Amino acid sequence: QVQLVASGGGSVQAGGSLTLSCTASASIANFCLGWFRQAPGKEREAVARLTYLSDTNYADSVKGRFSISRDNAKRSLYLQMNSLKVEDTADYYCAAVIISRSQCLYLGAGGFNSWGQGIQVTVSS
Image 1 (cartoon, helix red, strand yellow):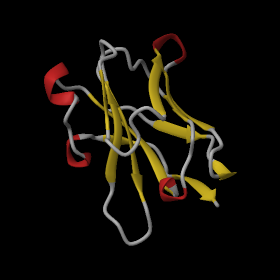
Image 2 (cartoon, one colour):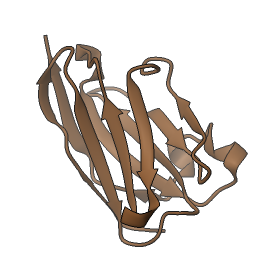
Image 3 (cartoon, one colour):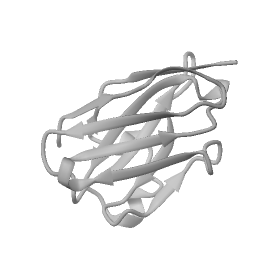
């Protein structure tokens, strides 16, 4: 496990962009990484996953708009969010676990064992 500290987020108008960051307490080079989000009254859902070889998998709702990336030297994970929509409003969480490449791409929230604190993203019309 690693400790994760998320940053970024805030309020933006629809069509705008935000970048979320997540910094780990130790090396994440071998970790499966992910971003999840949870809107009020809804279950936590996967937004994007990133394998240790930088394969990616995105939720259909964010494909073409969001981009997940990592910088192992900085022990950091990022989520670039463009063309934001009101329905993207949620608390966002970064997550990490050591798991196989194939399992990583479709791993649900229950499979991750390290979590950052939620950060709020609000998109207004």
